[in-house]
Structures are given as C-alpha cells and as structure tokens.
Image 1: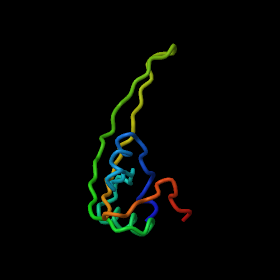
Image 2: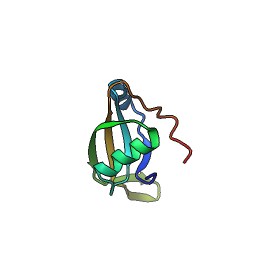
Image 3: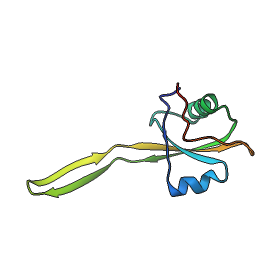
Length: 98
C-alpha cells in the first residue's frame, strides 16, 4: 500500500483545498482510485468520501549550454485529490513511519 502514495503535494492551491478537507497527493501512475482510497484510509485512519485523479503527460525540456543543446524529459505523474468526511483532517507532515 505504501508504494501507492509517493508524497503529499504542498503548494498554494493544495493548501487552499486543504481548508475544505480536500488533500492532494502524488500517487503511482498505475494506481487506481480504489487502491488510493484504501491506502489513505489505512495510513491515516480517516474516511474517504471522494477520490479524483489527474494525469500529466511526459513533456520535453531543452537547455542551451556552452557545449550545445541538451535535451531531456520530465516523467509522467499522477495526482489524486482526496475528499474526507466533514470534521476529519490529515496531518500531512506526519506521513507515518511504516
């Protein structure tokens, strides 16, 4: 289950969503909504109401240096928006020591 959740996303948008009991996590690209729900409920001991996922496609990047043009790519990622029951919260900074 721990391989499903990679890390919490701590951005300005995610912190605004956190005020409404909606939390954002980066998850494994191959994980589905049922696996994400079970992993959150097991790790944090909360009741999940809704799970929404977003895929980001891999994209290229280029950098011009003195030795010429260097090219590479960003990996594909997947984010999950988790909505909890009213009154429940997740302490994002404590990801559990499992």
